[in-house]
Image 1: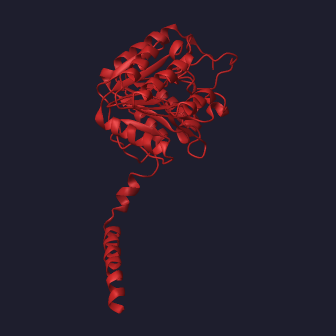
Image 2 (image 1 turned 135 degrees about the horizontal axis):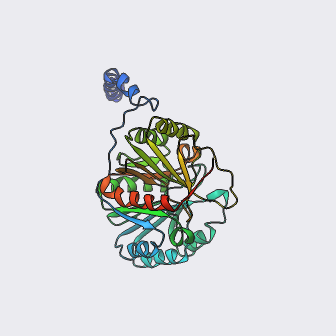
Image 3 (image 1 turned 135 degrees about the vertical axis):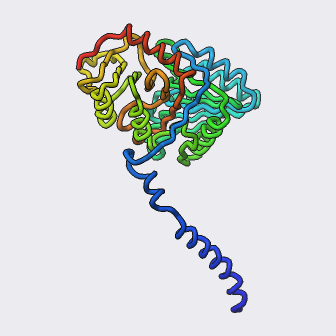
Length: 337
């Protein structure tokens, strides 16, 4: 009997000894150095150097064409989804045997009725979908799509205004590592697990969102240009104002929401204008060279609690975005603080 017990205990003792040795050899000082406050974290930021950039509105046919040409899978993560022709395109794809899955927010803007028609359509046609709730994230606000071995990361919801009138941006490419990370995040979120990106070109919020964006902005040598329908995070505003006070130009394009005459204080130094056309894009442009594009609103809740998705781009992909900003800036109205 004693011999049998020993045979069972011995492997446990060996495993325990291995973990004890690993514990003693772990470099806690280095770990702490890279896992504390933003002022101490050092990110070796990476950038996507090549991508297709589509400037919206009027990009609906392009997205539907991507759906129509998919052969194996179409996975969609989006905040609001109200377009009937998009629903029908997904149904046609499903009928051909394609793996169609959709993840969307159950209560966008705190309203369960916005996506209700789409959800009912999915149920009636057996399209696999997942509704994200506050038990998972404050809001599932990310906007991206995976079709076969390509992906799209966008600022747009799948609504009429996003494709007919809003300033939006769509980033598309076939980079395999970003594809792998997007797919991994999608599958885990779909199954109620929470995962972060292992590719530093991709930022999956809320983990480290504000810290990484602040570090991105701090490296500006000359200028920062921003598209932001909603820009109210006080920590981000304070840091941008400090950057501006140090001699680097900061320009902010905000949405001109009806009935909002009073604008939030965006700092004494930051130049602020209101877009004449509807604005929904969320973009940071640094020195007209590097760009961050994604679903992030620059608000406390977006940066700390939402599932968001964004991408760091370099010059070749930034050029058209920067040129579009310059055109929109010239046409915008000066906003009063």
